[in-house]
Image 1 (tube, helix red, strand yellow):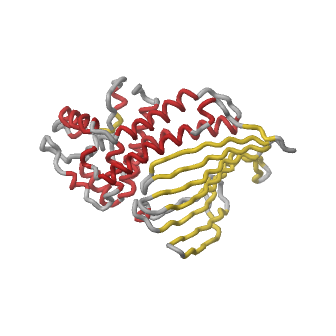
Image 2: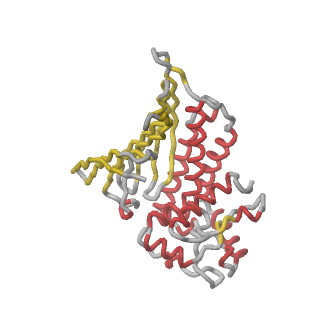
Image 3: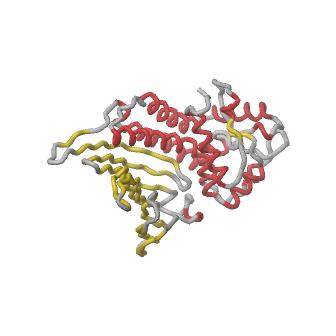
Length: 337
């Protein structure tokens, strides 16, 4: 149901967040309160802004298309962590199922000729009204199209059938055989998101040790600007230690990269004789430079960093990997204020 602050609203707001990051204005059509709309648009986006985004920030333009379900998946993870580490036992199961199944079926729907029929219908309905157009149409036909064409100018999409503005929407028929196969694979991998004990109310297992230990384990699949990632989520709680550990396996066009993310959550610490709760996060990313966040990347760089700590010295380690050569760079980063 398309209501402000509901799931559809969150989905569109994550699209808008990517646009807003580069100063591109937009409007979330959820605010029209058409509760059972067939499609919710992120409207009032200028063609030239999309041209500029694709030209200057191709990785962000690709991420723009998948950011909606990325936001929904992050919401599920956040609620699961809050429930596990806070022992809240909040009832979110319906929302978990709604988001995960909706994402699965939405990705799968891109691999169908019905997408073309809907695209033609929306193009005819919107006509020459550029402000009413969605920024992309079907999220995942556009995602896989731009993923495989990061250097193609946005203008090459051609002119809108009405004769006014650019033809933003990518049809299933616009995709190559390889792109269709790749998109179909993503729909299959979305089933991994259902390998999650939280979906059936299993919030954790107790391991009999001298110190009480709780754990839980789930799988995840997420689309990215360079391809996709398959993740293993490990929830660990022992006394005051709350650890959330993610093993990443990143995939692009031809290569595979590994990553590790570790979060130490709400650990009591003392600073100037005051007891605080610090939300310490250490995470590793596969790439950082814009030109390396694409489908044909051949290089990975890991950055291990601790976030959200006030006025302290933060550890920094980097691993640069290019083919068979590995280089390490380590040190400390000091940040105040």
